[in-house]
Image (tube, rainbow, N blue to C red; front, side, top):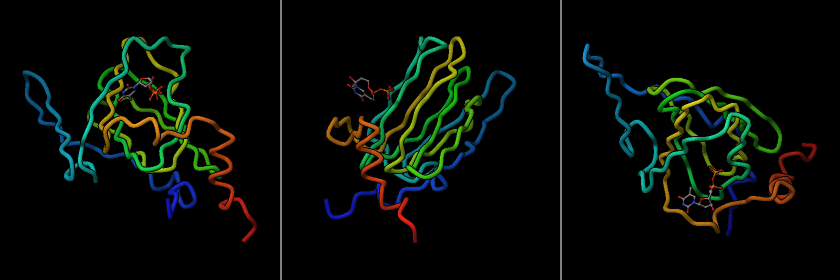
Length: 148
Ligand code: TYD
């Protein structure tokens, strides 16, 4: 790979995106469309549920994958790490999601009971795209910690 996104990734490129809420007295409706509310084509959707309150999910980064994470129900935290800076973000609204760009280590924790975490992903599942070892992640992001 010519350019690994880990060398330039920043937690500041990750952002909360507020979805439109179609509000009706008989219930609300929010929409996520690829290339519209999220800046990538959506190739995959998956969701986490029945996550124990003391469990951690994630614990990896991705080389190419971008994701948009929504707490469809309940709440949980996402800890973002670019190798230099960390940010903890609480997701607790079904109309507000977190865009995670490439090369960001993420851990999900603090799941409330009944939480459902929906993830819209830019690519099909590919284990080769994962970096699951934190020491490898630190090596891939090392250039960002060099004195300028
Ligand atoms: P993983 O991405 O590590 O989950 P999380 O980041 O939420 O903790 O995936 C957990 C397992 O599920 C792993 O064995 C791979 C499998 N998996 C799929 O088969 N397809 C998928 O789309 C995803 C996301 C995971």
